[in-house]
Every structure is written in structure tokens, then in C-alpha cells.
Image (cartoon, rainbow over all chains, first blue to last red; front, side):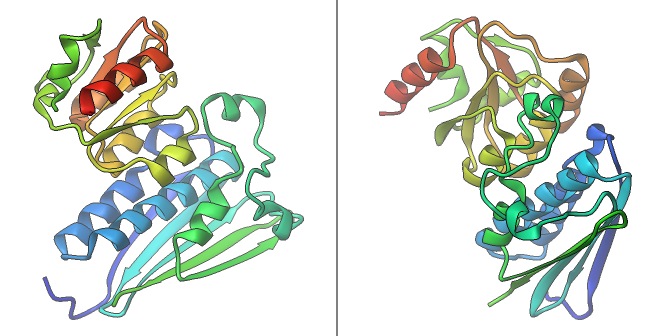
Length: 143
Length: 110
């Protein structure tokens, strides 16, 4: 299916609400598959979206995930009203996490989320203000 | 190999979406870290884990996994069962350990 205009979608995420975790990832994956994107982009998009959802659900009070699909790129923006990240370099390290114990027991909070998001996107930008929130922007180019 | 082929070899109980046992299994992945499964499991894999909460269903769904085997005699939570049924994800349980299940499935896939 050819893309003539930007295809958009958005999801509201509520902190602590684990029951909808993955909904954005599953919807975006389905949409990209219908649009005929190659399997590699679909796979990467599903990974980064799920991880982004989890970060809002685990750490923030609430947030939004928005995606924009154009013929050239897929852009995903996640904004949250959360505690913010004090040391972004540290947060980007594989295995570093500030998740509480109960979240780790669920198998989340292994310090893999942000690195996975960076690894699977062509452009990865993160901005954070302590006490206000965090914004992550990810772009995947479509060849 | 299908999930139904695994039954002949070991004790498994199908908890959700019974039709899914006819699905082709391409391989397996063993992990209890959900980000690890997100990053590394492949479509058609059977996922062996001790996690029982509802997020395992969304992981299986977005990764296109063939099914989930919950090991060590653990039981999936009620929300997990409901979600798996509606998302058409096959969940199985076994009293065996992840090591034993993985070993047997690995052999079957050879």
C-alpha cells in the first residue's frame, strides 16, 4: 500500500497501568505490516515502541506515544510527565536501571530498555528535565 | 515441528488458545527478562519462561511467537489467561524446569 500522506497514531499511557502495555507496539506493527514495510523495520519498530511504553508505565505518572509514518521515515515520539533522568549517560548504559524490586520481579527493569531503543533506531534523541519529564524521539529510515 | 509434537515427549498442559498447538515452531527462546525476549526472540519461536503475568501475552503477540511454556509448575495469572485467549496466544504449563523443557525441544528441533 503506497503512503501518500503522513499516517499518524497516538496512545495515552498511564503510569502503573501494566494491563495495556504493548498495545501501541502491537497496533504499530500491524499497521506497518499492512503498509508493506519490510520485516526488519517492523521488528525494530515493535521493539522500540514496546520499550518506550514500558518506560512510561514503570517510571512516569502519564505520557503520550505518537507515531508518524511517511514514505521516507517512521518517527516515534514519547513524552512523559515523570521524574526525569538525572544522568542520561548512565541511564543509557546496558544493565543500569533504577526500577524498583517488584518491577524487576516481573522481568522488566533489567536496564535494557533505552539501549534497545537506541540500537534499533537510526536516530535516537533523549531529552530530560528532572522533576518534569522525559522526551524520546526515534526515527527509522525507510529505504 | 508443531507444538502438538512436543506433547508426545513431555507433560504439558494447554491453558489457552488450544488451536494454536497446530502452529509451526521455528525454534525456542528461554528468558525471564522481557526486554531480552523483545530484542532477541524470533517469530515462530516457543518461549520458555517462569513469568506468569499478563505482559508475557503482549510480548508474544508483538513478536509473533508460536506460544509460551510456563515452567516449574507455575500457573499463569487470571488476567494472563483472559488476555491470551483474546489475543490467540497459546500458553502451556509444565512441572518441568526450563532446562529440561528447553533440552527436549532442542532435541526435537534437530
